[in-house]
Image 1 (tube, rainbow, N blue to C red):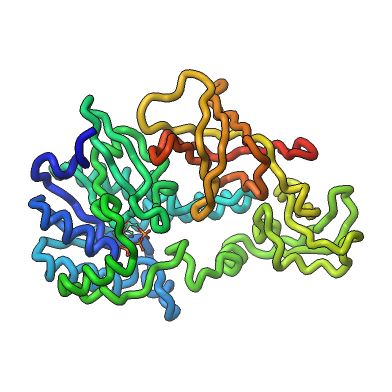
Image 2: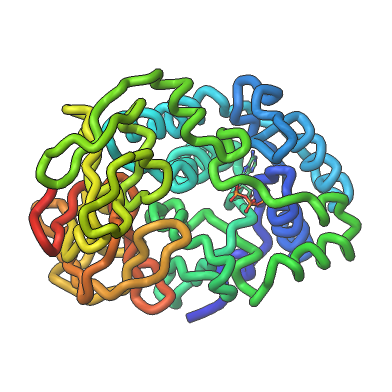
Length: 376
Ligand SMILES: Nc1ncnc2c1ncn2[C@@H]1O[C@H](COP(=O)(O)OP(=O)(O)OP(=O)(O)O)[C@@H](O)[C@H]1O
């Protein structure tokens, strides 16, 4: 294997600059490596001020100013592009629809798939750029046969390969992640930003979901979907309480159930199932969350699709650990079996398959098979 593609020759690079420290250092590293770098900040919210509530939100005017100041210090041209309509349609509306359907989406992954490495990348390529550079922590490795592989970042604690697991060969061929190559902690990145004179060196990290202020997902969804009172039931269907919207729950959730009656065994209860059809939330003991297998749809592969069953490690949520699986493509769907049962797998999330540190592919979890009973 050779080094990352960006090192082979100088490229025309479009650096996606959020106004945060990671993307500022990524752009600076790309420029320092000899590439012809232009910075771009994406305006992703139709009303940037609406997200300003003290904590960092997404794409405020302040963020675009921070990105511009960083570009000035690095000495690269800088633009602001308005992709708010695309972002609203492909990421925000998808997020709301998924919750409404009883699933748990990952909007960062969707944004990478539809915005940063689709709408942004297409526009960049049309303008003659070779690559889009971001501050993600992941590695692209160019193999001697010319194909590319996506790998976990050198620093596992910061690794973001999970949310990039949706990228296909074409997208990967034009992706540059200058932060993922080295063992780089956030503290080191901040120190590097300071050394480079970037004022964002001490800027706080962004939220998980950039378009939701103060991390209040429930408030955001309640605002979008309204109140829809329904029942909370146990596994036998006995009503235990009511909720104000099934979208407010995630499989495996324990807190905030507000059920008066304690479980007969006195143990905590967890969300086992969310039915948008009956607007019912089913709760039960932790053991009922154990999943032995799942089916996932819309598979995407980094490289050729596997031709038969294979053994992989899998990651099932953005900050989750790894688990061993066997996986096989059957009629275009991914059928996955866990070596050991795993707890609290949420439909709507992505399963990303790894071979060591290499991302093999990903798919969206559609249904799970519990160890105790089959549940769609
Ligand atoms: N509004 C935006 N405009 C341009 N690029 C963006 C924007 N939001 C995110 N990005 C790009 O996507 C990358 C990952 O986004 P994420 O929200 O995870 O940022 P982050 O890890 O907090 O990084 P940063 O410190 O640069 O904000 C960023 O490093 C940046 O390159």
